[in-house]
Length: 313
Image (cartoon, rainbow, N blue to C red; front, side, top):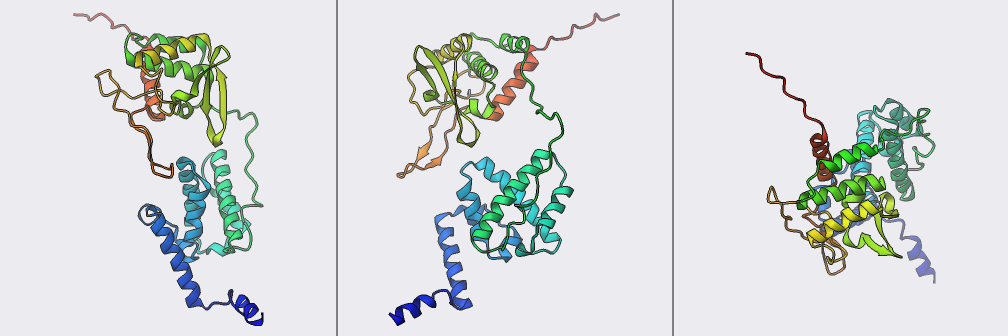
């Protein structure tokens, strides 16, 4: 019994060499499991000097499955830590005063500052839990206040403008039918471009005598929206012409077109491994940026062209 207790008590008293070898073993194991860490995942110098690289990487990759959120939070954290490094501060010497000064000096909108503080709060929470820091310096730092009457800058599409955009498309072609279905879905639901781009065949369903759209929004939220009669006509016309009415449920609805051929580009669904993890994302469908360019093109086509003035000899 005494020997067992003595051994248990000595488990946390390893020398620096044993602790260093343990940390190196963890780092080597994580690098073998996640080879992208050694290639593309750049760790800030402040984190590396504190031997918190493993904590930094596991926080970003484990906490944020969405790659866009992960990149945004990593950018905010890296920018703050680089600023602290220039001030000669180490990771465990960052205080609420430092975070407050950085918040006041940071250029950008109120939402950008809020995102920065949210990223720092969550990052330092993990550092405190793993005993790299004694306290969370961002937890007591207040968010900047929004200006009175700030309701966002995205305006609603007027009905006449929507009609002009739809009228500028050629519904006799496959591209025109697709673009008409995209614009009508966007205007009728008020959803984000990203949610429209992620629409798959299983998200367009017929329930209780009516078609509905299941939209995957941010933060894993799902909206179920009944389809209006005009949108229903546009969607079904496109699906029937494109031959997607009987497509597998996981396939994307709005496909990309190969050049000026008017035909679909080769669609490749998600490739998964034996564990069901996606190792290669689908290709051959409209991305959010493609939809934005399509909207710009439709707006330009809908504008009335100025008449040429007669030439004078």
